[in-house]
Amino acid sequence: MENYVCSVCNYVYDPEKGDPDGGIEPGTAFEDIPDDWVCPVCGAGKDSFAPK
Image (tube, rainbow, N blue to C red; front, side, top):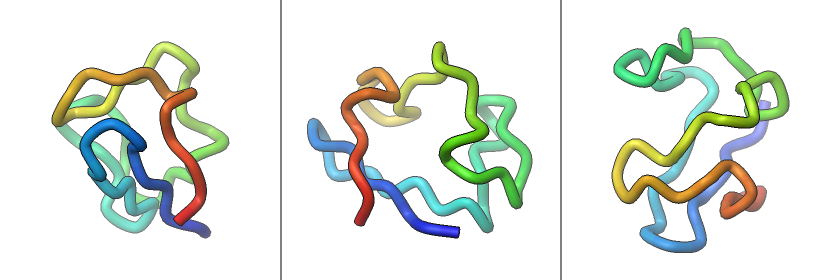
């Protein structure tokens, strides 16, 4: 699974870690995250992320 980086704040979404505080379990591929998920650091939408 590939890491994705936020183009606004450079937060890296790592599928192995997920985003437990945001309700995303470890092992969740970026493509499987709900479309309404936002960056846990800056609040940017999922569409602000690109493959790292």
